[in-house]
Length: 97
Image (tube, one colour):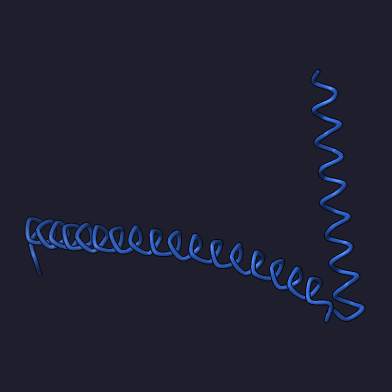
């Protein structure tokens, strides 16, 4: 049967081992958080680029005259949205003067 000091030594060595494991896991956790953040930023950039390209495609279709009825309606809807936004900005500018 181990003595009290031997038991305390065993407990201390296990605590030291757990502290080391904790530091390793904490470091890994930080690395993973940074990786997630980096991937989220990359995903956001890709989404933004995709939306920009989608709008460019709609404009090209409308400009080339090959837009089908659905594309034309979507294009007109987008143009109307832009016009409303411009009108809203003009109104806000007029209120500030």
